[in-house]
Image (cartoon, rainbow, N blue to C red; front, side, top):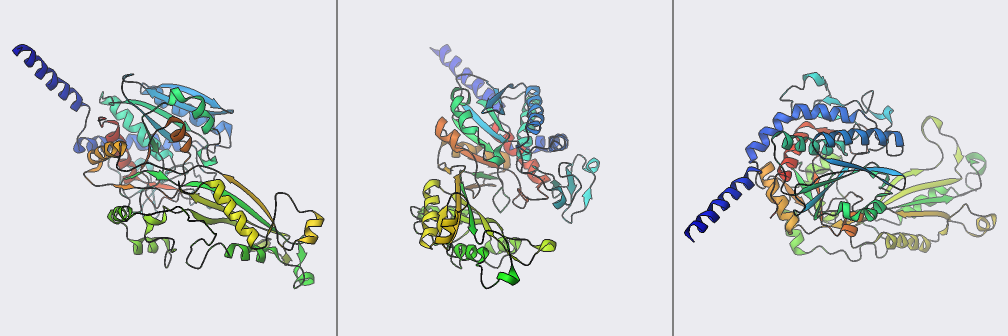
Length: 505
């Protein structure tokens, strides 16, 4: 019995040492990430050089091949999965079939580019600039680059930056001969900016392959404090196109002004009925079902936010009055005019009454507000304002009968999701972030304002999801001169390394 006890104690000591050998300290994570940074930046430059608009199959193929080479080089088994004609890349490293699986989602595609709007010749040629906009030669970044420099290129932040941080952390683990305490699965999406039209079928057709206990999303911008961020939810999206009809064709404003109604004014009046002067949506039932508890308010108050500083950075006098504070506003559905058009402007301006006026609208949704229902609320509101809705150009009879004719087209996109912060995945990621960034040197956010196509994974696989947020909040996401701060990029490697080496409880 005595020898049996000794054997058990020795085994436990050996097990503890073996387990702890996989876990790096904060100091080790920081040091290894700094050492890896120069190589990671060069990898990043190479990755960014490939155009990645998901509308073009040849660009998908080039990026997929690059990702495939990277993952196979670090011992991952890869597989191209085609869903409705669109290729995706899956990679896995199974350490033990009995261990838990964590699925990582990487977005590889980026927004379309108008190079004339960029402050550099080629938006895919990564350019390092200081805070004054001065270019720093890539060759001069060196082993200890200035962390306030920013790397400018399409997809620098959304989301080749986070993907490169993740790959660099995996390379570090390979170099240190470390393995995770879980099986790693990775799915790469090449049409996220198109709302991932084939991802739902892909997940449904590959449930067993993608089966996971947790889903981690390597996408999204940090909290406005620029602290490392974990986000436990995202808003969904629905879109609406409104076109108001005037005369059958554009009319001379001198001959027909004061006689033929201008559809731009009609559209403006309709849009003005949707929100009050404080930015609150006036559509009946729009905010129904939304509740912010006292506990939520206490949690929001703990998040470091300076509204005056944020307003100054945005260049606005005051925020809209949907809720008190930035975090609370993200818990409500929004209504946004994302584009308007009627006639011509600028050098092409003409003295005409336009035949049509169009507004493109997006609705950001929360779990309590289903997309189809919200679209119906908007439609009903327009009808209450006297609009006659059509789904095709109006007939002569309709034109003769109705004074306000509106073409209405709508569709739903990504669904909203929300994971409980106080949960197993929340606690596990908290431990990892403490080691990766320092205790409590990060923020946990209930929900981001943006949208991500994660509902297919969450619903089909029945898995909790959290976003790992790396890029700086002033990254010009989706816009010209998109960027990521070098310091954020380095911290991103730390965050990934901390998560990949955190034992599962």
